[in-house]
Amino acid sequence: MSQDGARILIAGCGYVGTALAARLAGEGHEVFALRRSEGPPLAGVTWLRADLLDIDALRGLPPRIARVVYSASAGGGDDRAYRSAYVDGLRYLLAALDGHPVERVVFTSSTGVYAQMDGGWVDEQSPAEPEHFSSKRLLEGEHLVLHSRFSATVVRFAGIYGPGRTRLLDSVRRGDAVIPDGPPVYSNRIHRDDCAGVLRHLLFLDRSDALYVGADHEPAEAGTLLRWLAAALGAPAPRTELVADAGHRYGRASNKRVKNARLLASGYSFRYPTFREGYKSLMVRPY
Image 1: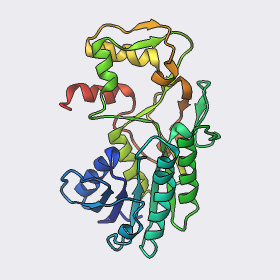
Image 2: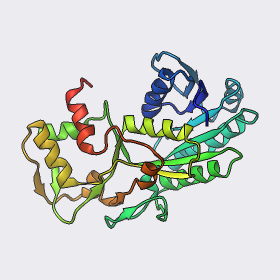
Image 3: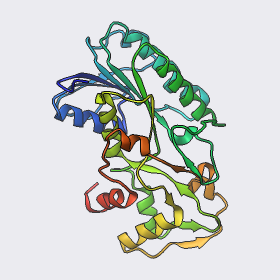
């Protein structure tokens, strides 16, 4: 698949999409970034202010779009908002792309579609049987794009952290972080810059599978993660105690370990292979 000067649309260009847009524009691609609000000035990026539910606005897309990233986020926390973002908005955009020479659509989903809670390993072959409406709508979006007329790829990202998302670091610095007592609680993550890198990789991959999971190399047990952060920051070691809502704070409600072997086999090389490299970059850079 040619990588020369493609016309690329990023639909729902937020936290990850903005980083991707800057990277693609820096490589010489013609990038159109669509979002509801005004975007930050980026060299080589044309911002399109529109709502994905506005069919008339979508009919005015620039011509000859060759590649698309759909990375919308829900504008609210209820089922209607998730359906609008991941099902209806996607359907309207796919219809608006009729007649464009689209070579690939990449849809961003979430490892939240896996309901496993036993700390076991999951990958692309694992059953996705979510109970919450948010993940059910993501699965609907996945099915919609994979059964569209376009060549499509879905990537299910783990928890995204990076510049500007320092809540965990701040809690460790303050001494507020607590390691939940009891069995190990695993969480999975990926740095924002690797999210952008994965999307860029999949956009131009000659032979892409339909589905990938996007997580770094090391699912982290809560104690391992928090103790390392405290040591790296020179902060007091987090205390261990019973935490009533440990599932919501540290991932027990989706306690699993995500395996990224398929993504690695496709040729992607992580900039931040584990939380150690990723969080260390946030400690030394002025974000």
